[in-house]
Length: 175
Length: 280
Image (tube, rainbow over all chains, first blue to last red):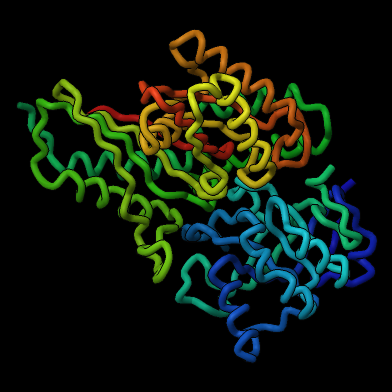
């Protein structure tokens, strides 16, 4: 059975999720991958405010291909999440509630997910053309100079993913 | 001598990169269809179905299969009776640039690996391996290599005493450590022998071979089959969510090596193993 969830997720929603559950997400989320995470990290270290409030938000690790005319976005599948591990506990401690990516996370991230009652979803790597069909709107947010790595706000409808690490620290990849 | 216009090489390269990014090979489609029959869990079946659906959409709409349209890698066999009218290297890079611009493909190359990391904005330079061969044609095998799987690749210089068991242990260790990260089901390219860099090049070349083909040497063919069986017993499965299909194929290429070594390179490719060949 697929659970239909709305973004932003509530703490109650997150508590009901178990590693391995299939879900769909509908609402708004932000994109950010390697270079944007590095900038977030440096900004926080320098005492600066982030370009958007991460509290209760969802970040999707993606660097899309360009959109053809008539498309909201180009192919946009998840990138490997472990490269964001260094920056993730900081964002979780600032209130980020969910991440979407693919693959394993390190113990620091799992611990921060548990402490903050957050959740990590996996989308299917390499299913970029299919996934892009559930992204209906794309607005640039910041760091446009980063090209495909710029931060955008996506509106998604029935975006398919799987609970990879739940708020209790259960990890689908450790089964 | 036969004269080939640089323009013709540019056009061929451009066409190939747009096509290979949108159209997965029949070998991969057939293997995914087989995986669908073998898998038992609902999750594994669903992942394979979504990959097949993804590839159908990409083909129908001529959009990229994966957003990571990779670095452009070309193996060129350059006939010694060919003269290129124009700049050969520029022709290849211009073909790549135009393909990535006009084909709505992602530009993923940065100019400097450590300090600047500034995007070159046209996905060049391409990585080109050129070999002079006898003949009056140019053969190009091109592929786009995504780095989710490239990052999971490794190389090791084994002692001759490690033998075939050492080779097996290393290949299996690399695949196990990669786990869900390289977008399984994967194609495992293994390069054995040569020097340090030659084994890596052989491993890449192996991923550009059809997964329907086996190594011509019966012993290496058996090794490919045995490794595939052992990898699929690991249970990593489609998308790393568990299942029987962790790899679609193990492709081995080998070369003569030094008396002191068995170099082994393992180059992992995701299920979107995208490559095409052409003769000009």
